[in-house]
Image (cartoon, rainbow, N blue to C red; front, side):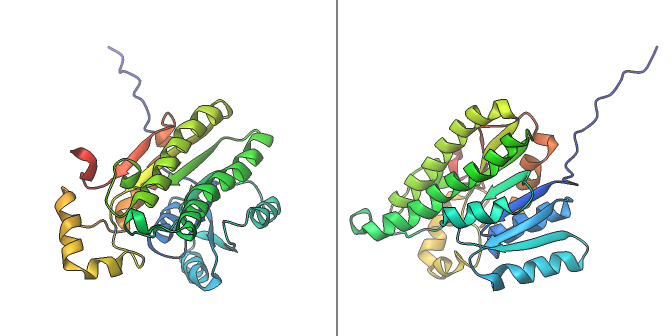
Length: 257
């Protein structure tokens, strides 16, 4: 009896791919840039401050990975378009840069609203336009990953504005997957829970806040940056070639109930 022809597991490698990561100088952004570089991608780290990304890029190159930097305010659409026009097309875009201004709903100001929505919603919208317009023009396939949040799936006190921005990202992800799918461009989101990063660490100095958070995370611990690295590689690679328009929750079970 002849042996069956066995399927071959799609590759998780990203060799030859060019990846762009916004907000890549620290925390989740840095971890995702490192993961992409480890998988073989040539990674461009984007941040407003050169010192935040130069050290990471040098550390990656010192170990033989491919990395460079782009100092840019992602909210400056014209500067972003000009900078990316001068570079080869990117196969992978990680829209990670974001912010939060948690406070009671009645206290949210117009400045709060504009700051959060500009960075969390308009910037990834425009960045995705720039990157995918180039991919479509060159008839290239690509991957867009939106870094959302569990707060894009649920609500929480003192986070009406942040939840609004992340729910918008989830809707954007689905709509772009529908529109860009025929061009071979996949669009997904990753929705993390509370991770321990330089941005969030001060919040956890409040024991009551930390206890409240941990009571919702079924795995009983805060996320560490390493916990998001595999999710990024999976969704960016051919291993997820049939996945688009969905959200991968890296939330320790927060939204399971």
